[in-house]
Amino acid sequence: MSEARFLELGIELPIVPAPSANYVAWRRDGRLLVLAGQVCEWNGKVLYTGKVGRDIDLNTGQAAARICGLNLIAAIRQACGSLDRVRGCLRLGGFVNSDPEFDSVPAVINGASNLMMEIFGTAGAHARTAVGVATLPRRAAVEVDAIFVVED
Image (tube, rainbow, N blue to C red; front, side, top):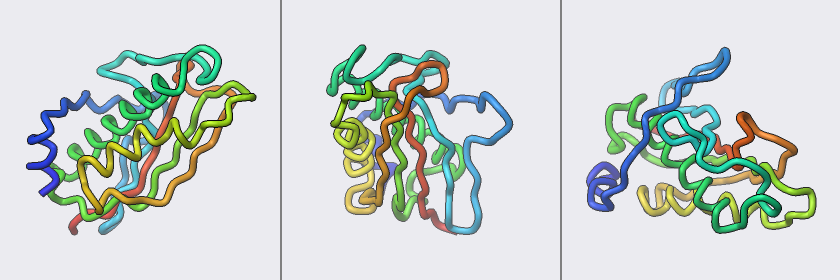
């Protein structure tokens, strides 16, 4: 059902970013699919850099988080071959390169959370962490990682 919903929405996916260090984009153990953190990169270019709350606003931060989510979904497709194999999103971990005074970090990560609900419906409901950090790779504004349950 997720693949049809995805196609119905007409959402484009980026190419899964190649890992930039000694790790893999995803790792599967049985029904658990653990996805490495994805920054707001689109086909090799980080689209949003700097600190949310200083260099970019909340809405732009949410757009950055959505792109992180799209990268995660591209990695799911790479790992499973089809989004139809997704049974649920267990957890999202969100990291926001934020100004120390910015207090809307959870609202930024809603950009990724809302995408999961949009594509997977109730199976997209997840536990979540949203943390403000001093910096992220390549000065990205947002990074999101995830754990999904998929068909064996």
